[in-house]
Length: 126
Image (cartoon, rainbow, N blue to C red; front, top):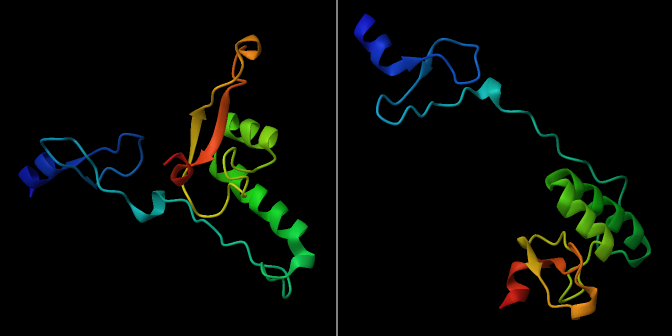
């Protein structure tokens, strides 16, 4: 058993449990389930439906909160500037499609720092 332990088990890269199965060639380790953070599902309040036009503001606010938790600060700032809408199709960014940062053309006198960076849906580029 000692040779199995010496060859296939290492200390985790971040410390902790000493019995972590590790590939001897690539040094890649298996994940322990206890290392994975539990992600809770946000329940929809009462009988709110995305199809109800009177609840448009509720769903936009909820989508913004989800977008902000899933993205970096730079993307959050760009999204706020754009009103959380795609720069090309003007639909909400949080509709299930992949969102990318695109360098959009702007007039020469307006080129400063990041004025020309926009968030767009990946399918909108093609």
